[in-house]
Amino acid sequence: MEPTWWVANLKALKSTEHRLEALNKMSMAISKSAALPRETVELLLNCPELYECATIAGEDEQKKLNQPVVDAAVELLRLSLEPLEINTEDEKLPGLLKRGLTHPNASVRSVVLNNLLRELRRQSRESTVRPLPSNELIIYVLDELKQPESECSTAAISVLAIVLTLRLDDAEIQSKLVQLLQQNDVIRCRAYELGVMLAKRNAGSLKSVEFILDVALSELHNTDVLLQASVMEILVPLADQNHGLTYMERRRVFDVISSRVQRIEQEPLNMLLIPNIMKFFGKIGAVQPHKIINDYPIMVECLFDQLKHEDESILPTAMETLANLTSTPQGKVLISMRFEPAMLLALKTLGVYVQKLSPQVKIRLLESLDVILATKTRPNSEITAIVSRWYESFAGGEQVNYIMDLYNTPFDDLQIAALTLLKTLCTYRWGIAALQRTGGAVEHLVSRQRDLHKDVKFLKWEIIGLLAGSEEFTATETVRFTAYVNEGPYYVLTQVNIATESQG
Image (cartoon, rainbow, N blue to C red; front, side, top):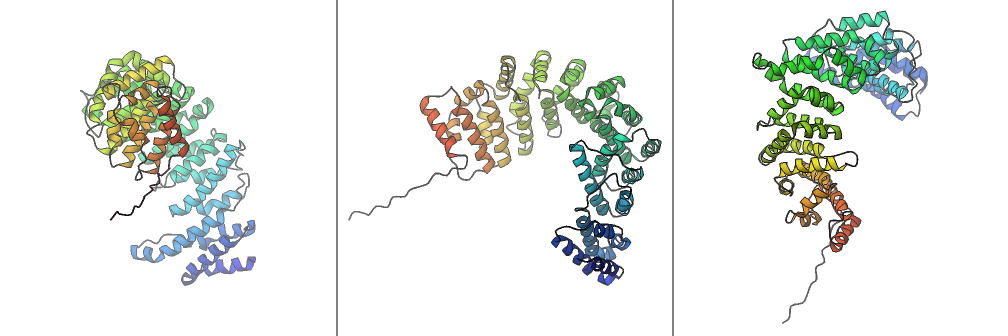
Protein backbone atom coordinates (compact mmCIF):
# COMPACT_ATOMS: atom_id res chain seq x y z
CA MET A 1 0.00 0.00 0.00
CA GLU A 2 1.12 3.55 -0.78
CA PRO A 3 1.88 5.90 2.15
CA THR A 4 -1.10 8.04 1.11
CA TRP A 5 -3.42 5.05 1.68
CA TRP A 6 -2.19 4.64 5.26
CA VAL A 7 -2.46 8.38 5.92
CA ALA A 8 -6.05 8.42 4.63
CA ASN A 9 -7.09 5.50 6.85
CA LEU A 10 -5.39 6.96 9.91
CA LYS A 11 -7.25 10.22 9.30
CA ALA A 12 -10.49 8.23 9.20
CA LEU A 13 -9.87 7.32 12.86
CA LYS A 14 -10.82 10.89 13.79
CA SER A 15 -14.42 10.03 12.90
CA THR A 16 -15.97 7.67 15.47
CA GLU A 17 -18.36 6.10 12.95
CA HIS A 18 -15.52 5.19 10.56
CA ARG A 19 -13.04 3.88 13.12
CA LEU A 20 -13.87 0.18 13.14
CA GLU A 21 -13.89 -0.07 9.35
CA ALA A 22 -10.56 1.79 9.02
CA LEU A 23 -8.89 -0.29 11.73
CA ASN A 24 -9.99 -3.57 10.16
CA LYS A 25 -8.86 -2.44 6.69
CA MET A 26 -5.38 -1.59 7.99
CA SER A 27 -5.08 -4.86 9.92
CA MET A 28 -6.10 -6.79 6.82
CA ALA A 29 -3.52 -4.90 4.74
CA ILE A 30 -0.73 -5.75 7.21
CA SER A 31 -1.78 -9.42 7.32
CA LYS A 32 -1.57 -9.63 3.53
CA SER A 33 1.68 -7.67 3.29
CA ALA A 34 4.93 -9.59 2.94
CA ALA A 35 6.86 -6.86 4.75
CA LEU A 36 5.75 -3.59 6.29
CA PRO A 37 8.13 -0.67 5.61
CA ARG A 38 9.69 0.94 8.68
CA GLU A 39 8.17 4.29 7.68
CA THR A 40 4.68 2.79 7.77
CA VAL A 41 5.28 1.20 11.18
CA GLU A 42 6.46 4.53 12.59
CA LEU A 43 3.45 6.27 11.02
CA LEU A 44 1.11 3.85 12.80
CA LEU A 45 2.90 3.93 16.16
CA ASN A 46 3.03 7.74 16.16
CA CYS A 47 -0.68 8.18 15.39
CA PRO A 48 -2.50 9.64 18.46
CA GLU A 49 -5.93 8.60 17.13
CA LEU A 50 -4.90 4.94 17.09
CA TYR A 51 -4.18 5.04 20.82
CA GLU A 52 -7.40 6.97 21.38
CA CYS A 53 -9.30 4.12 19.71
CA ALA A 54 -7.67 1.68 22.15
CA THR A 55 -8.85 3.64 25.20
CA ILE A 56 -11.58 1.91 27.21
CA ALA A 57 -14.67 4.05 27.84
CA GLY A 58 -15.72 4.84 31.41
CA GLU A 59 -19.43 3.99 31.45
CA ASP A 60 -20.38 0.30 31.24
CA GLU A 61 -22.85 0.82 28.40
CA GLN A 62 -20.44 2.98 26.43
CA LYS A 63 -17.65 0.51 27.16
CA LYS A 64 -19.75 -2.28 25.63
CA LEU A 65 -20.39 -0.20 22.49
CA ASN A 66 -16.73 0.77 22.11
CA GLN A 67 -15.22 -2.67 22.82
CA PRO A 68 -15.05 -3.82 19.15
CA VAL A 69 -13.12 -0.63 18.29
CA VAL A 70 -10.81 -1.09 21.29
CA ASP A 71 -10.10 -4.72 20.34
CA ALA A 72 -9.46 -3.77 16.70
CA ALA A 73 -7.06 -0.99 17.74
CA VAL A 74 -5.08 -3.31 20.05
CA GLU A 75 -4.87 -5.90 17.25
CA LEU A 76 -3.60 -3.27 14.80
CA LEU A 77 -0.93 -2.21 17.29
CA ARG A 78 0.11 -5.83 17.73
CA LEU A 79 0.39 -6.35 13.98
CA SER A 80 2.34 -3.10 13.64
CA LEU A 81 4.87 -4.02 16.31
CA GLU A 82 5.52 -7.62 15.25
CA PRO A 83 7.52 -6.77 12.10
CA LEU A 84 9.35 -3.89 13.80
CA GLU A 85 13.05 -4.52 14.25
CA ILE A 86 13.54 -3.09 17.72
CA ASN A 87 16.98 -1.52 17.92
CA THR A 88 17.46 -0.87 21.62
CA GLU A 89 20.31 1.55 20.85
CA ASP A 90 18.03 3.71 18.68
CA GLU A 91 17.51 7.11 20.33
CA LYS A 92 14.07 7.32 18.68
CA LEU A 93 12.87 4.08 20.31
CA PRO A 94 11.62 5.57 23.62
CA GLY A 95 9.54 8.15 21.73
CA LEU A 96 8.20 5.46 19.41
CA LEU A 97 7.07 3.24 22.30
CA LYS A 98 6.09 5.93 24.82
CA ARG A 99 2.39 6.12 23.92
CA GLY A 100 2.05 2.35 24.16
CA LEU A 101 4.01 1.98 27.42
CA THR A 102 2.07 4.76 29.16
CA HIS A 103 -1.38 3.94 27.75
CA PRO A 104 -4.26 3.52 30.26
CA ASN A 105 -5.35 0.24 28.61
CA ALA A 106 -3.29 -2.63 30.05
CA SER A 107 -3.76 -4.64 26.84
CA VAL A 108 -1.92 -1.95 24.87
CA ARG A 109 0.94 -1.86 27.37
CA SER A 110 1.10 -5.65 27.28
CA VAL A 111 1.52 -5.70 23.49
CA VAL A 112 4.40 -3.21 23.64
CA LEU A 113 6.12 -4.80 26.64
CA ASN A 114 5.99 -8.32 25.22
CA ASN A 115 7.45 -7.21 21.89
CA LEU A 116 10.24 -5.39 23.70
CA LEU A 117 10.84 -8.45 25.88
CA ARG A 118 10.99 -10.72 22.83
CA GLU A 119 13.85 -8.67 21.37
CA LEU A 120 15.72 -8.40 24.67
CA ARG A 121 15.49 -12.15 25.23
CA ARG A 122 16.92 -12.71 21.76
CA GLN A 123 19.84 -10.42 22.61
CA SER A 124 20.28 -12.16 25.95
CA ARG A 125 20.37 -15.63 24.33
CA GLU A 126 23.00 -14.41 21.89
CA SER A 127 24.92 -12.53 24.61
CA THR A 128 24.52 -9.30 22.65
CA VAL A 129 22.50 -7.17 25.08
CA ARG A 130 23.16 -3.58 24.05
CA PRO A 131 22.95 -0.54 26.36
CA LEU A 132 19.94 1.73 25.97
CA PRO A 133 20.71 5.30 24.80
CA SER A 134 19.10 6.80 27.93
CA ASN A 135 17.01 6.01 31.00
CA GLU A 136 13.78 7.14 29.34
CA LEU A 137 12.59 3.70 28.23
CA ILE A 138 13.56 2.14 31.58
CA ILE A 139 11.54 4.78 33.45
CA TYR A 140 8.43 3.97 31.41
CA VAL A 141 8.82 0.26 32.20
CA LEU A 142 9.53 0.91 35.88
CA ASP A 143 6.31 2.92 36.05
CA GLU A 144 4.44 -0.20 34.90
CA LEU A 145 5.19 -1.75 38.28
CA LYS A 146 3.01 0.95 39.87
CA GLN A 147 -0.03 0.06 37.76
CA PRO A 148 -2.98 -1.51 39.61
CA GLU A 149 -3.35 -4.30 37.02
CA SER A 150 -1.00 -7.25 37.38
CA GLU A 151 -1.24 -8.64 33.82
CA CYS A 152 1.76 -6.63 32.56
CA SER A 153 3.96 -6.68 35.65
CA THR A 154 5.58 -10.05 34.87
CA ALA A 155 6.69 -8.88 31.42
CA ALA A 156 7.86 -5.55 32.86
CA ILE A 157 9.96 -7.29 35.54
CA SER A 158 11.50 -9.57 32.90
CA VAL A 159 12.37 -6.57 30.71
CA LEU A 160 13.92 -4.73 33.65
CA ALA A 161 15.88 -7.78 34.79
CA ILE A 162 17.70 -7.62 31.44
CA VAL A 163 18.13 -3.88 30.81
CA LEU A 164 18.92 -2.82 34.38
CA THR A 165 22.03 -4.97 34.64
CA LEU A 166 23.97 -2.20 32.87
CA ARG A 167 22.43 0.67 34.88
CA LEU A 168 22.06 -0.58 38.43
CA ASP A 169 24.27 2.13 39.92
CA ASP A 170 22.60 4.99 38.02
CA ALA A 171 21.29 7.57 40.52
CA GLU A 172 18.04 8.20 38.61
CA ILE A 173 17.28 4.48 38.41
CA GLN A 174 18.10 3.96 42.09
CA SER A 175 15.74 6.82 42.98
CA LYS A 176 12.88 5.21 41.01
CA LEU A 177 13.51 1.87 42.71
CA VAL A 178 13.39 3.52 46.13
CA GLN A 179 10.03 5.07 45.17
CA LEU A 180 8.66 1.60 44.43
CA LEU A 181 9.62 0.49 47.94
CA GLN A 182 7.39 3.23 49.37
CA GLN A 183 4.23 2.00 47.62
CA ASN A 184 1.59 -0.54 48.71
CA ASP A 185 2.47 -4.16 49.42
CA VAL A 186 1.56 -5.39 45.90
CA ILE A 187 3.93 -2.91 44.26
CA ARG A 188 6.63 -3.53 46.87
CA CYS A 189 6.46 -7.27 46.14
CA ARG A 190 7.01 -6.54 42.45
CA ALA A 191 10.10 -4.55 43.40
CA TYR A 192 11.30 -7.44 45.59
CA GLU A 193 10.82 -9.90 42.73
CA LEU A 194 12.84 -7.63 40.43
CA GLY A 195 15.52 -7.26 43.10
CA VAL A 196 15.86 -11.03 43.47
CA MET A 197 16.08 -11.56 39.70
CA LEU A 198 18.86 -8.96 39.46
CA ALA A 199 20.66 -10.24 42.56
CA LYS A 200 20.81 -13.78 41.15
CA ARG A 201 23.08 -12.70 38.28
CA ASN A 202 26.25 -12.17 40.31
CA ALA A 203 27.60 -10.84 43.60
CA GLY A 204 28.10 -7.36 42.12
CA SER A 205 24.45 -7.11 41.07
CA LEU A 206 23.35 -8.33 44.49
CA LYS A 207 25.38 -5.59 46.16
CA SER A 208 23.72 -2.96 43.94
CA VAL A 209 20.19 -4.10 44.88
CA GLU A 210 20.93 -5.00 48.49
CA PHE A 211 18.77 -2.09 49.63
CA ILE A 212 15.77 -3.75 47.94
CA LEU A 213 16.49 -7.13 49.51
CA ASP A 214 16.93 -5.59 52.95
CA VAL A 215 13.46 -4.01 52.75
CA ALA A 216 12.06 -7.36 51.60
CA LEU A 217 13.58 -9.08 54.64
CA SER A 218 12.04 -6.49 56.94
CA GLU A 219 8.62 -7.71 55.75
CA LEU A 220 9.27 -11.00 57.55
CA HIS A 221 8.55 -9.09 60.76
CA ASN A 222 5.29 -7.70 59.35
CA THR A 223 2.05 -8.69 61.08
CA ASP A 224 0.45 -9.44 57.70
CA VAL A 225 0.77 -13.23 57.36
CA LEU A 226 -0.10 -13.22 53.64
CA LEU A 227 2.59 -10.63 52.94
CA GLN A 228 5.15 -12.68 54.86
CA ALA A 229 4.18 -15.74 52.81
CA SER A 230 4.55 -13.82 49.53
CA VAL A 231 8.00 -12.52 50.50
CA MET A 232 9.17 -16.02 51.44
CA GLU A 233 8.11 -17.25 48.00
CA ILE A 234 9.93 -14.37 46.29
CA LEU A 235 13.17 -14.93 48.24
CA VAL A 236 13.55 -18.63 47.40
CA PRO A 237 15.46 -18.20 44.07
CA LEU A 238 18.21 -16.28 45.90
CA ALA A 239 19.49 -19.60 47.24
CA ASP A 240 20.16 -20.91 43.71
CA GLN A 241 23.60 -19.25 43.74
CA ASN A 242 26.18 -19.33 46.51
CA HIS A 243 26.41 -15.53 46.72
CA GLY A 244 22.65 -15.36 47.30
CA LEU A 245 22.78 -18.08 49.94
CA THR A 246 25.67 -16.28 51.66
CA TYR A 247 23.63 -13.07 51.76
CA MET A 248 20.65 -14.88 53.30
CA GLU A 249 22.87 -16.50 55.91
CA ARG A 250 24.50 -13.17 56.73
CA ARG A 251 21.06 -11.63 57.24
CA ARG A 252 19.98 -14.68 59.32
CA VAL A 253 16.97 -15.29 57.07
CA PHE A 254 16.78 -19.00 57.91
CA ASP A 255 16.95 -18.29 61.64
CA VAL A 256 14.20 -15.68 61.41
CA ILE A 257 11.87 -17.97 59.48
CA SER A 258 12.57 -21.09 61.53
CA SER A 259 11.88 -19.08 64.71
CA ARG A 260 8.28 -18.79 63.52
CA VAL A 261 7.96 -22.54 64.02
CA GLN A 262 9.66 -22.45 67.41
CA ARG A 263 7.28 -19.73 68.66
CA ILE A 264 3.99 -21.31 67.55
CA GLU A 265 2.76 -21.78 71.11
CA GLN A 266 3.39 -18.12 71.95
CA GLU A 267 2.15 -16.85 68.58
CA PRO A 268 -0.62 -19.17 67.28
CA LEU A 269 -1.02 -17.11 64.09
CA ASN A 270 2.32 -18.53 62.97
CA MET A 271 0.43 -21.77 62.28
CA LEU A 272 -0.99 -20.06 59.19
CA LEU A 273 2.56 -19.67 57.89
CA ILE A 274 3.56 -23.33 58.29
CA PRO A 275 2.70 -24.38 54.68
CA ASN A 276 4.65 -21.41 53.28
CA ILE A 277 7.58 -22.03 55.63
CA MET A 278 7.62 -25.66 54.47
CA LYS A 279 7.65 -24.54 50.83
CA PHE A 280 10.45 -22.06 51.54
CA PHE A 281 12.75 -24.58 53.21
CA GLY A 282 11.79 -27.33 50.76
CA LYS A 283 12.60 -25.31 47.65
CA ILE A 284 15.92 -24.23 49.12
CA GLY A 285 16.53 -27.81 50.18
CA ALA A 286 16.17 -28.89 46.55
CA VAL A 287 19.35 -26.94 45.66
CA GLN A 288 21.08 -26.85 49.08
CA PRO A 289 19.87 -29.98 50.95
CA HIS A 290 22.76 -29.99 53.43
CA LYS A 291 21.92 -26.43 54.49
CA ILE A 292 18.38 -27.31 55.54
CA ILE A 293 18.76 -30.91 56.75
CA ASN A 294 21.97 -30.38 58.75
CA ASP A 295 21.54 -26.81 60.00
CA TYR A 296 17.78 -26.64 60.59
CA PRO A 297 16.66 -30.07 61.85
CA ILE A 298 13.70 -28.44 63.62
CA MET A 299 12.26 -27.62 60.20
CA VAL A 300 12.57 -31.24 59.07
CA GLU A 301 10.96 -32.40 62.33
CA CYS A 302 8.12 -29.95 61.75
CA LEU A 303 7.71 -31.34 58.23
CA PHE A 304 7.42 -34.93 59.46
CA ASP A 305 4.89 -33.76 62.04
CA GLN A 306 2.77 -32.28 59.22
CA LEU A 307 2.91 -35.60 57.36
CA LYS A 308 1.20 -37.38 60.27
CA HIS A 309 -2.11 -35.62 59.65
CA GLU A 310 -4.70 -36.73 57.11
CA ASP A 311 -5.48 -33.11 56.22
CA GLU A 312 -5.90 -32.55 52.48
CA SER A 313 -5.12 -28.84 52.88
CA ILE A 314 -1.66 -29.59 54.35
CA LEU A 315 -0.61 -33.07 53.21
CA PRO A 316 0.15 -32.30 49.52
CA THR A 317 2.35 -29.30 50.39
CA ALA A 318 4.16 -31.28 53.08
CA MET A 319 4.75 -34.18 50.69
CA GLU A 320 6.01 -31.86 47.94
CA THR A 321 8.39 -30.31 50.47
CA LEU A 322 9.72 -33.76 51.38
CA ALA A 323 10.13 -34.46 47.66
CA ASN A 324 12.20 -31.29 47.28
CA LEU A 325 14.44 -32.24 50.20
CA THR A 326 15.06 -35.75 48.81
CA SER A 327 15.17 -34.91 45.09
CA THR A 328 18.98 -35.14 44.98
CA PRO A 329 21.24 -38.07 45.95
CA GLN A 330 22.73 -35.91 48.71
CA GLY A 331 19.27 -35.12 50.07
CA LYS A 332 18.32 -38.80 50.09
CA VAL A 333 21.46 -39.79 51.98
CA LEU A 334 21.15 -36.98 54.54
CA ILE A 335 17.48 -37.71 55.29
CA SER A 336 18.29 -41.41 55.64
CA MET A 337 21.25 -40.71 57.95
CA ARG A 338 19.48 -38.23 60.22
CA PHE A 339 15.74 -38.98 59.98
CA GLU A 340 15.34 -42.59 58.80
CA PRO A 341 12.76 -43.68 61.46
CA ALA A 342 10.63 -40.57 60.82
CA MET A 343 10.94 -41.08 57.05
CA LEU A 344 9.84 -44.72 57.21
CA LEU A 345 6.89 -43.84 59.45
CA ALA A 346 5.84 -40.99 57.15
CA LEU A 347 5.90 -43.24 54.09
CA LYS A 348 4.02 -46.01 55.89
CA THR A 349 1.35 -43.49 56.88
CA LEU A 350 1.23 -42.18 53.32
CA GLY A 351 0.60 -45.73 52.07
CA VAL A 352 -2.56 -45.77 54.18
CA TYR A 353 -3.70 -42.27 53.19
CA VAL A 354 -3.17 -42.73 49.46
CA GLN A 355 -5.93 -45.34 49.34
CA LYS A 356 -8.67 -43.04 50.61
CA LEU A 357 -7.89 -39.42 49.72
CA SER A 358 -9.49 -37.49 46.85
CA PRO A 359 -8.17 -38.28 43.33
CA GLN A 360 -6.41 -34.92 42.92
CA VAL A 361 -4.57 -35.26 46.23
CA LYS A 362 -3.64 -38.86 45.37
CA ILE A 363 -2.09 -37.59 42.13
CA ARG A 364 0.02 -34.99 43.95
CA LEU A 365 1.18 -37.56 46.49
CA LEU A 366 2.14 -40.06 43.77
CA GLU A 367 4.04 -37.34 41.88
CA SER A 368 5.93 -36.44 45.06
CA LEU A 369 6.72 -40.08 45.79
CA ASP A 370 8.06 -40.40 42.26
CA VAL A 371 10.50 -37.53 42.90
CA ILE A 372 11.55 -39.08 46.23
CA LEU A 373 12.34 -42.47 44.66
CA ALA A 374 13.76 -41.30 41.32
CA THR A 375 17.38 -40.48 40.49
CA LYS A 376 18.54 -38.42 37.52
CA THR A 377 21.83 -40.31 37.32
CA ARG A 378 22.64 -43.99 37.74
CA PRO A 379 22.24 -44.68 41.49
CA ASN A 380 24.97 -46.28 43.56
CA SER A 381 24.30 -49.19 45.90
CA GLU A 382 23.69 -46.88 48.90
CA ILE A 383 20.98 -44.87 47.12
CA THR A 384 19.42 -48.05 45.73
CA ALA A 385 19.18 -49.56 49.22
CA ILE A 386 17.73 -46.34 50.69
CA VAL A 387 14.94 -45.94 48.16
CA SER A 388 14.15 -49.67 48.32
CA ARG A 389 13.57 -49.41 52.09
CA TRP A 390 11.49 -46.28 51.60
CA TYR A 391 9.29 -47.87 48.96
CA GLU A 392 8.71 -51.04 50.99
CA SER A 393 7.61 -48.89 53.91
CA PHE A 394 5.10 -47.12 51.67
CA ALA A 395 3.84 -50.29 49.96
CA GLY A 396 3.85 -52.56 52.99
CA GLY A 397 6.26 -54.99 51.36
CA GLU A 398 7.86 -55.96 48.06
CA GLN A 399 4.81 -55.57 45.83
CA VAL A 400 2.99 -52.92 43.77
CA ASN A 401 -0.61 -53.59 44.81
CA TYR A 402 -1.27 -49.98 45.81
CA ILE A 403 -0.02 -48.69 42.48
CA MET A 404 -2.01 -51.20 40.45
CA ASP A 405 -5.16 -50.38 42.46
CA LEU A 406 -4.68 -46.69 41.66
CA TYR A 407 -4.01 -47.54 38.02
CA ASN A 408 -7.31 -49.47 37.85
CA THR A 409 -9.44 -46.35 38.33
CA PRO A 410 -11.52 -44.43 35.77
CA PHE A 411 -9.36 -41.27 36.10
CA ASP A 412 -6.79 -40.71 33.33
CA ASP A 413 -4.65 -38.36 35.44
CA LEU A 414 -4.51 -40.85 38.29
CA GLN A 415 -3.62 -43.69 35.91
CA ILE A 416 -0.80 -41.55 34.47
CA ALA A 417 0.54 -40.69 37.95
CA ALA A 418 0.44 -44.35 39.03
CA LEU A 419 2.22 -45.59 35.89
CA THR A 420 4.82 -42.80 36.07
CA LEU A 421 5.72 -44.01 39.56
CA LEU A 422 5.73 -47.64 38.38
CA LYS A 423 8.08 -46.68 35.54
CA THR A 424 10.49 -45.19 38.09
CA LEU A 425 10.31 -48.37 40.18
CA CYS A 426 11.17 -50.45 37.13
CA THR A 427 14.48 -48.63 36.74
CA TYR A 428 15.58 -50.64 39.80
CA ARG A 429 15.97 -54.43 39.99
CA TRP A 430 14.06 -54.43 43.29
CA GLY A 431 11.23 -52.54 41.58
CA ILE A 432 10.92 -55.11 38.82
CA ALA A 433 11.01 -57.86 41.45
CA ALA A 434 8.14 -56.13 43.29
CA LEU A 435 6.17 -56.04 40.04
CA GLN A 436 6.80 -59.76 39.49
CA ARG A 437 5.55 -60.58 42.99
CA THR A 438 2.23 -58.80 42.40
CA GLY A 439 -0.26 -61.25 40.98
CA GLY A 440 -1.66 -60.26 37.59
CA ALA A 441 0.31 -57.00 37.37
CA VAL A 442 2.51 -57.96 34.42
CA GLU A 443 -0.42 -59.50 32.52
CA HIS A 444 -2.43 -56.33 33.07
CA LEU A 445 0.39 -54.19 31.67
CA VAL A 446 0.83 -56.22 28.49
CA SER A 447 -2.89 -56.29 27.72
CA ARG A 448 -3.92 -54.05 24.81
CA GLN A 449 -6.94 -52.14 26.13
CA ARG A 450 -8.55 -49.91 23.52
CA ASP A 451 -10.16 -47.31 25.76
CA LEU A 452 -7.02 -45.99 27.48
CA HIS A 453 -5.68 -42.44 27.23
CA LYS A 454 -2.78 -42.19 24.76
CA ASP A 455 -0.38 -41.10 27.54
CA VAL A 456 -1.36 -44.17 29.54
CA LYS A 457 -0.64 -46.39 26.53
CA PHE A 458 2.73 -44.71 26.03
CA LEU A 459 3.72 -45.17 29.69
CA LYS A 460 2.74 -48.85 29.55
CA TRP A 461 4.91 -49.21 26.45
CA GLU A 462 7.87 -47.54 28.21
CA ILE A 463 7.48 -49.84 31.23
CA ILE A 464 7.35 -52.94 29.03
CA GLY A 465 10.52 -51.65 27.35
CA LEU A 466 12.24 -51.64 30.75
CA LEU A 467 11.00 -55.17 31.43
CA ALA A 468 12.26 -56.33 28.02
CA GLY A 469 15.75 -55.12 28.92
CA SER A 470 15.71 -56.76 32.34
CA GLU A 471 17.41 -60.04 33.23
CA GLU A 472 14.71 -60.91 35.77
CA PHE A 473 12.39 -62.66 33.30
CA THR A 474 12.44 -65.92 31.34
CA ALA A 475 13.41 -65.99 27.67
CA THR A 476 9.77 -66.57 26.71
CA GLU A 477 8.62 -63.53 28.68
CA THR A 478 11.40 -61.38 27.23
CA VAL A 479 10.38 -62.35 23.68
CA ARG A 480 6.80 -61.38 24.49
CA PHE A 481 7.87 -58.00 25.93
CA THR A 482 10.14 -57.31 22.95
CA ALA A 483 7.28 -58.03 20.53
CA TYR A 484 5.07 -55.60 22.47
CA VAL A 485 7.73 -52.90 22.25
CA ASN A 486 8.29 -53.48 18.54
CA GLU A 487 4.56 -53.17 17.86
CA GLY A 488 4.60 -49.67 19.36
CA PRO A 489 2.53 -48.03 22.11
CA TYR A 490 -0.66 -47.60 20.09
CA TYR A 491 -0.86 -50.99 18.39
CA VAL A 492 -4.41 -52.35 18.12
CA LEU A 493 -5.11 -56.07 17.90
CA THR A 494 -7.19 -56.95 14.86
CA GLN A 495 -10.14 -59.25 15.44
CA VAL A 496 -10.80 -61.88 12.81
CA ASN A 497 -14.35 -63.23 12.70
CA ILE A 498 -14.78 -66.58 10.97
CA ALA A 499 -18.32 -67.26 9.68
CA THR A 500 -19.45 -70.87 9.38
CA GLU A 501 -22.54 -72.30 7.73
CA SER A 502 -24.91 -74.11 10.03
CA GLN A 503 -25.23 -77.79 9.35
CA GLY A 504 -28.76 -78.85 8.57
